[in-house]
Every structure is written in structure tokens, then in C-alpha cells.
Length: 179
Image 1 (cartoon, rainbow, N blue to C red):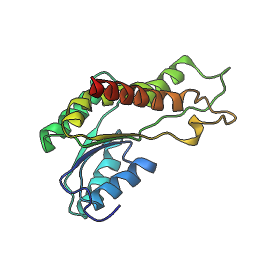
Image 2: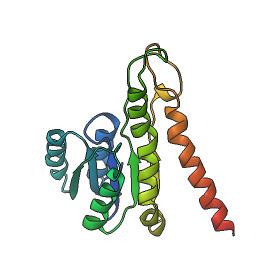
Image 3: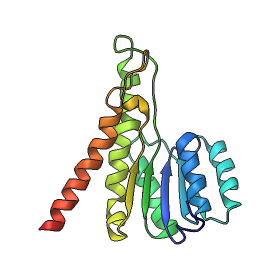
């Protein structure tokens, strides 16, 4: 990203403490965005915050389990309280369990669906009013495991669960603009 290309913009990044989410957090901070970084590991969030602040960016960290009721609302509320709006929502948090369809417990399946599908829906739903006001964007990140099967990975529907709500929202917003 070009330096300070996102100055004056606010981004929420889930899964910000590792992997793609962390890379997004670093890139947006370097590009000048105010960042709301979300993760479950408070120590990793504190370390990330310190690193991001060296870029001069404003950073808010939110330790939240997005699989629980109210998790998305607390994240959006933190963004609105600190930055008065949201321009970009990056859903990078994900959870995968090892196991086949025969040996994956319903508890493990439900945890994957809660993070990989439900959390994305509730975050989009909570952030949408501000995103619409600011003509913002949503980025839902999936991995290759959502597109193809791997032995011992019970990650069916991850791609559909992430992309389906995005397409649905896009189509409904396009139709509402047409009248």
C-alpha cells in the first residue's frame, strides 16, 4: 500500500494477532489508517499495538471472542467510540479443526461455524450502517482450505460461509440503489 494512502480512514481487522490479519494490520497502519485490531490473545494484541504505534497510526485493540453473542457489537462500538465511523471491515479471523467428517465433534464443528461464518455475518451486520454512511468496504478473507479438501481437515463450507453473505449483501445493496 502506498504510504498514508488510508490517512483519515478507519479499519477493523479481525484475526489481527497472526497470519493474514496481522499483515493487514501492519499494512493499514503503515498506510495511515486508524486501526481497530481484534483478537483473543491479549499479550499478542499488546505487542501488535506497540508495533503499529511506531508507524504513527492510531490503534485500538479489542480482545474479543467473536463466536459469542455481543462480540461483534463490542468491536463495532469500540471503533465508533474512538474513530466515529468505520471505512473498512477486514474479516480475517478463522478457526479450523483437525478431523474428518466421521470424527469431528459437533462442538468442534459449531466452533468453526461460529468463527468462520456467524462472526462474519454479525460483524457485517453491526458495521453496515457506518460502512454505508462512509461508502466503505468489506474484505472477507478465506484460505485455500475453503476451496479444496485436505485430508484430516473438517473445514467444509468455509468459503461459502464467507463469500455467500458478501454476495448477498452486494446484490441487495445494488438492487436498493436501483429503486
